[in-house]
Amino acid sequence: MDQNLIARFEQEMMRLYEHEKREGRRHARFLPMLKKYGAINAAERLVATKYTAGLGALQESDNLDLSVEALVVKYKELFPANVIMRAQAKLDAIRSGRELPEEEAKVALKTLKIRAKATGISPNELLDRVTTTD
Image (tube, rainbow, N blue to C red):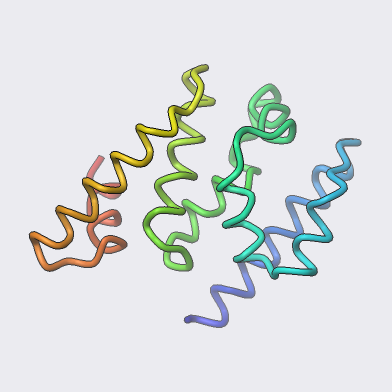
């Protein structure tokens, strides 16, 4: 993996933490997760959860670009397709004001894997093609 890209991602994750701290929103588990798991694994764990208060607060202040989910989508080269899809689905759901149907995300991932296998393209590359043409 590109070490410069990883370093930039880590810096942006810390920037998210510092922004939330300045806004008076302390997330007691965020910094310990970064230290324990590293930025990439912490991001994967956070994306796997349901909505958090932090994500809701960012949506209310029109700052979803400062979410872990937005960073995962931005740095998609660092993550597997299922994590990217989950992050994008959470962002889409919160923007539209609906709950994220877990089954919808599972079906989308299964469809992506089937298409990837049929075309001989990796799921990440196929996802990249789909998201850059929308």
